[in-house]
Image (cartoon, rainbow, N blue to C red):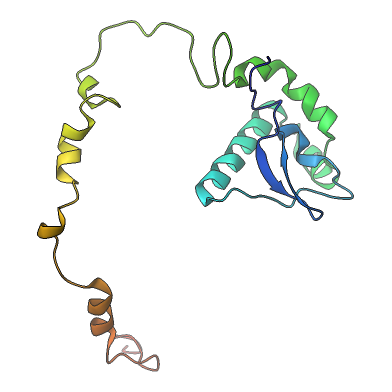
Length: 172
């Protein structure tokens, strides 16, 4: 079985005028004239932003325009998925998420050296007993303050009217 690859697999949720779908990075311009991709449709904004950053980085490093005129030409008449497919082909091995050999974002070289003094702060080792975790721990229900924030906000804004100018406004 072939490894799951971020360039070969359709994993980006997208919306077209016709229906939602999943696309590969090379499919960004598929059906551009008749049924273009309108947006990436992750259920979370941070996933959408990360996917856009991923695509921007991929395109900027592997398919940069030669000059400003080439950029405007590509903007008005985007390259076909076949062009992107050929452009991304040399990178395929670097985008494997599973399988044999190195994986996506994995460095195959040995780290070498001695562990640093920050080793207790690494994930999975002492994360609940670090100074930061101790200082930001959520207090138990019995130790939480009993103030109602929304009530306090309503009280502090009571008496203000939208017609009132902010303090210091107009005083010159």
